[in-house]
Amino acid sequence: MDTDRPQQDDFDRGVLNRRAVLGDAWVDKSLGNATAFNAEFQELITRYAWHSIWGRPGLDHTTRRLLVLGMTMGLARWEEFELHCGAAIRAGVPLELIKETLMQGAIYCGVPAANTAFKIALELLKHEGRTPPPQSLAADVRVATHHTFSRPQLAVSVQGKGAPVVLAHALGLDRRMWDDHAAGLAATHEVLRYDQRGHGASAIPPGPYTMDALVDDAARLVREWGRGPVVWIGLSMGGMVGQGLAIRHPELVRGLVLANTGAQYPAAAKEAWAQRIAKVEAGGMAAIVEMVIERYLHPGHRAAHPSAVESLRRTLLRSDPAGYVACCHAVANVDWLESLAAVRCPTLVIAGRLDLGAPVAMSEAIASRIPGAALVVLEEASHLSVAEQPALFAEQVQRFLARAS
Image 1 (cartoon, one colour):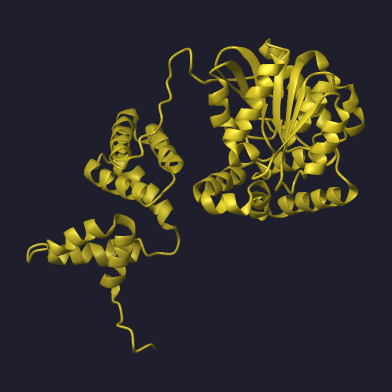
Image 2 (cartoon, helix red, strand yellow):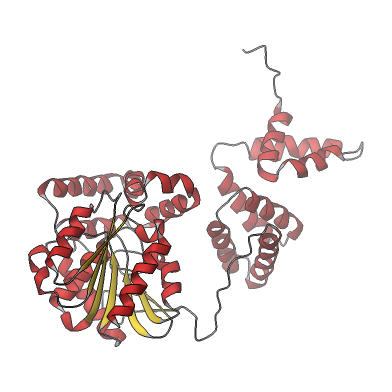
């Protein structure tokens, strides 16, 4: 036993947890203002609630915080809800998790309770200088959600007015990958995003899938929308689908943006894909999530944007392992390279200098085979260039759209 350090009893351990969750100011006030009448009560809740319960190893503090929000919301204990919600916001609990907790509460606690909880949370965010940006539900700007009538059903979001643009996401992600970029484009274009089969809210038919099947999905999506020909903007797997659409269904595409993508993999890369598939089949998405994050976002971006890393991690872990594996087969066997000369629509190829998953050489190979294609390399971007360099990505896309219109 280390005799040089004072030993903490359960009260001291509870105070540490209480400070970690609620902050020093609140705890100092509660303990400092204790009286002969309530001191034993303060000691009881500090030992029992804050050490015996909050100190249990079964749940992390973030999960416990969210549970408290849900339970105080359900019991209409609004003073305690406000205390814990404010503490969670100040501690950096992702707003996405707080929002989802309140959304879940709307079902199990009732809409009036959720309405009060959202009102309190918004006031707390305003007080902390973190007022969320506006997101109007007016008819001319609202994001409408649909699904295809043909099968397998694909989940779809549409927003904006103007010439039609389709956004196709990367492997393991979903249409929310494009939230910010879609909002920017919607000022001048009608923008459709969708979850590819096996992803997000779309159907997950039995795999493995082929790239031709993903292209067939894209073609029926555009035809059902009835707004073609479209400008197709695809990143990674979405770019592979765009290449196939322009090759096999040229009448549906009037412009093509291919970001951080490839047209063919060498044999060594295919072996790496086989290893990835085996890992997911054995251990689910958790077996590869850190590896994918490292390939999707470069070290500098990860260090500067920890909340974005956590959001990406949650999205990948939500991805259905069977759908992910089924799409891995399609991606690993992509083989458009020798057919790209048939593409006749204006094309912009975007690469990331730091991209390990789709190196610049892959983009150069694509651009050299599509007649008239332009190549842009974003120096401080890896695989998810639209997330790492959103302003530069949007600038290049807007310039291309102006030319392609």
